[in-house]
Image: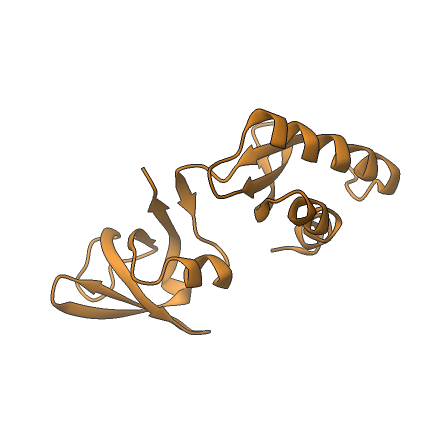
Length: 151
């Protein structure tokens, strides 16, 4: 996360937890001409529109008051979704032993740049995946993205 997304996570995390939810992720992205601040939340049993509205009603006035973002942007509060991008160690820990889709910047260990595997373990430098009977270790810097499909 960046300093901005860390700051927003710090503003909203306790509120989300107090309301029986988990903060999944915060991202700030430029898409076309517009900027988006997205807060992803999760809860056992799923997130409803009323949960998103509650977080929005809490966070929006705080952001207006603190004004941490110079340019105009859209605030979006959303469920973490059924297909989840794994970005943080807490995400990886949650899905150890689960099938994941992995994207790499280049072919690694003779694998295509996108492959399916089971996440076996990780450390600060590497991810280890199982593909059939084969175990493959990939440097974190070679992984461009990883997701899990909960459908």
